[in-house]
Image 1 (cartoon, one colour):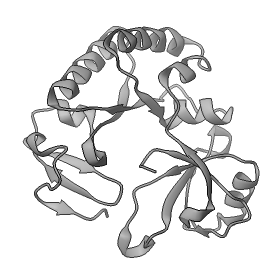
Image 2 (cartoon, one colour; image 1 turned 135 degrees about the vertical axis):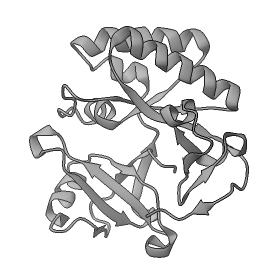
Image 3 (cartoon, one colour; image 1 turned 90 degrees about the vertical axis):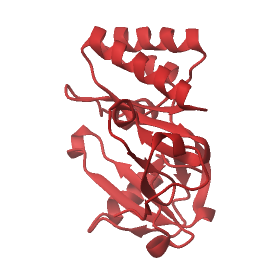
Image 4 (cartoon, rainbow, N blue to C red; image 1 turned 120 degrees about the vertical axis):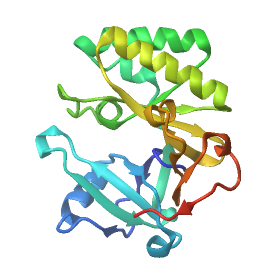
Length: 217
């Protein structure tokens, strides 16, 4: 299981609510057989347990809940939904824009996953997308050439459709960086992994070790 993966938790298993006064709502969420998202784990406080998140829908003011659960409580897990799956559930101005992006990706052999509001709306059937929503995309990349090509694609898509794409480029070893930061002229970028984050040069992405490694705040 990696960051951004969705997990379905046994509602009978024990969990720890990390958001104050959220235990009852979290229990109801799990009993409804709705997924949680795998978050970045802090080994110092989480140990071997999973750090998980639940972003509530618009009807509940988009509140973000956090919890911790043992790995054995996971009934199943899956990556975020595909762009194709999200396209089938969206409507309005987003539909044409996502269709165009899907065509571009298909022609290049790219298969981004969708998280954030669009992903949660597709998975749960609840309303998450609002006028200010971004399109959050997770791209698996092999090297800097592929990462640069994706950045160019997204910049073009944004300029044509006047919508905003957010998300991450994930290199080998689960090392992910925000695509917009990668496309900038910053000498180093913030790398996020499953249990840590640190600053690194682009050349170091995907390597076993990066300079200035630091634990998450």
